[in-house]
Length: 408
Ligand code: ADP
Ligand code: MG
Image (cartoon, rainbow, N blue to C red):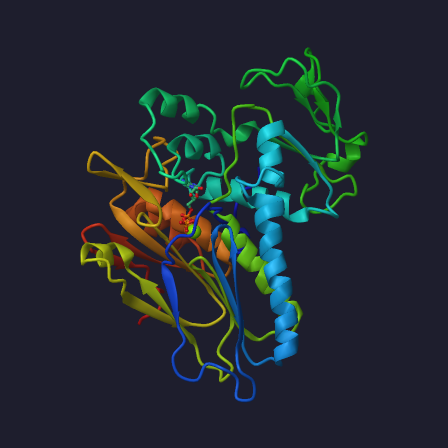
């Protein structure tokens, strides 16, 4: 697995698939005349990743903007339902979790491996605080149930924690051939033979082989190309992927790519609180993005209010909060961001983290990771990453910002 360097992390991604609408933690403040001088802004809303998606294009002729918005909504639907949803049984993610093997071609589904690799890089970069392997834990915590919960028994959590090791995921260049899938192995016993590592399977029955041509795999980046596509194998059959902490951000980034390609110079992409700005307002000034403090609002009697605003252009602003999804049991609140080290909700003293970054997938993953890491380790991580800033809010209301976090 390659190390994530700064350049890499800034082009990285993450997202979250949620089965019901959640409160947005970010609210755009489009004050004054945000629209172009000649054309009104054109907006569209939809429901994807089980959250509200809203996209607004500025400074473009209405019919063309509407065409593009339709394309953007189709993209959101694609990333949610076809690729990354853990709840749609036919998505690629569900199929990999179920079958433990997924053969995908570069031509048809280049983004699945792209996001998986990015997630694995971010797991390493965050010392495991962001983990794409928490599907089993998420399932037993049942945050998305109606009603959610209850708190799982401790032995179930311990058991689920034994199936979160990302080193058991194999990614091989080439479509691969399934030779035999009987007698499914126990975790760690699975035999996988890749073309460039034939010795790995020596002495045992190969279950999978990768590309016939050893040269095809050697030294190449599986995400980069190769007509045979790639084979992803969960060699620990108990492991389940959950890309819920990064997928929304990734989808926002891909939607931005499409808008830029189409010549859009001013737009706002808001995927359930993951705000990604395209350029600046048509008059060249910055957008204002409000950060809603739901925690203190709830304490004050449920009136949401904007406690902070940032003004900026062409950036991603993502907030993760412990108040986004939770249930209470015996007076204790259990929220949906899990500490991969304990299997329990993160208990770092933070209630929310806002990340400003170039791309939204990275911001999405880093926000989740920082909630797990806590303010000190989180701040140290963000300060290592150029062009990335953070705002940490602790349970007692204490607020910390990295040096470059934009002033209000
Ligand atoms: P939200 O989706 O509410 O904005 P996040 O982006 O922080 O919140 O993602 C939370 C989702 O990510 C959870 O619902 C779960 O699917 C997944 N998740 C929970 N804990 C982690 C973690 N430590 N690392 C990666 N993903 C996580
Ligand atoms: Mg998020």
